[in-house]
Length: 614
Image 1 (cartoon, rainbow, N blue to C red):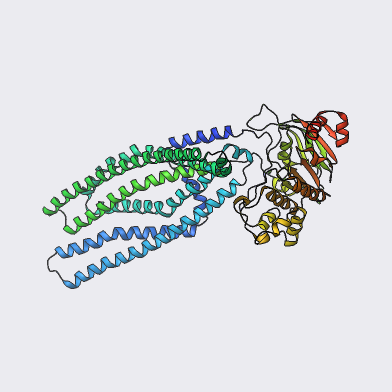
Image 2: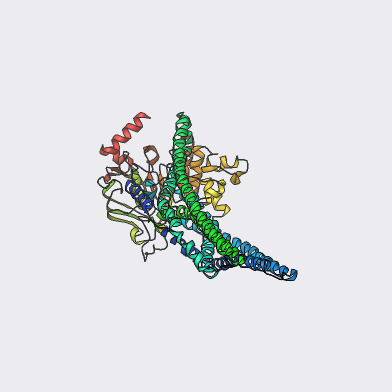
């Protein structure tokens, strides 16, 4: 089961994240203009953690490259002996045995190179996936207001798969060809300095296409990855709201939208493929054209007796190896560029920092917990709308064990109070205290460990019903789970399931009805046994009968717990110790139901509208 953090319902949800989206767009533009692959340096710590495997991979990489080059020397021995006078069968056999020994060494070294390079790459990629996901779970809600979940998943899957291809395949091919190229050039100098000089004269013409086309390939690669992420994000949005799409008959529109995004990604890929194909063709033509020309000159030198036929064959072998290595490097360079673009996108996730983080030296919350809450002159505005405060001069004190209801019109800031208490955000002014400790001085995880949340639409997860309840408290025993289920009035429908508590409830528990899901969410909160209980429209998804049952269960569960209840239906808060009425981010009234009705203020008007309508 996945482990996202709790998310209360958002009242007046801000359209925040525009600044973050702009930042991501700007960084994407910078990626397109990048002229190097320095982003791949981020992989160094992951590789260093497995230096033993990496060292073995490097050793066998060197051995296999050396054996490849040694093949040319072994062939030279055979050719020189065959063209010499006084040919002897015994020495011919020895020369061929030498070729066989080099080939066997090459086979073993190549197999071991493949094993260690691939296993090291897979190990590094597995660590990278875990590190990225672990970091994503630390990001606060404002990040996801500006970045679609589908795009994040695209980076976590597709982009990491590109890195996997680089580490498991491309980097090995690139390093092997680089070593062969360097080794071949050095050996060529010893075989024939004159012919080697002619080979080197062709190199500027070979490298030129890499620079001419390389920058464009890099830009198109990044663009293609961004377009694919858009397609995944589009699909994710439609699938998340599939029932809504079908209810409004918008299947064709959703399919067309995804199809357009896929076509954009395909067109971007085709532009990249076309450019890479042109680059590859240019490199191969120039490389092998140069090799053939130089070999032609070498054959004439052999006819004049200036070079032995064995040396000429070795030179040809080495020249072809060098040319093939240059061509292969041109191919793998495109993969390296693609991986650099992917690592750049992954790096954006790793570089993202939550707006709320633990202090360097967090203050420990007092033990045992009391559940005392205080808001002192709070001013808070969401990042995307700094000129429109959600809370302004808001103050509230909740005594341990007190049951306080927050009511008011939509947009009055009720859910924002819970967000600040859960420390998803920090206020711009004022303090939020839990048991006398300023939340900014405490570790957010310790703060949240003292709270249990039931939101208006509490997400559940795939897995069994029991696993969803235990999500509230890891290690909760069977008796604790059963007690929470009974308190949430969920025992009846759970016992009716085919496998009881062990029944798989499907993706996001869609096998259950809305009311059943909400009661399971309430059981998850109750098993947490936290001193502070937060209920944000916790019974809004239930019908009248279930609401009555769950409300009775909650009344019992709230005893001994500090409780903050948000409700639009005032009938659900009549038994609160105190009702706090909010309007435009401020407390405008507070008291019991009867006292507030007698004041004939905002609460009285809200109550009159609801109870008269009823």
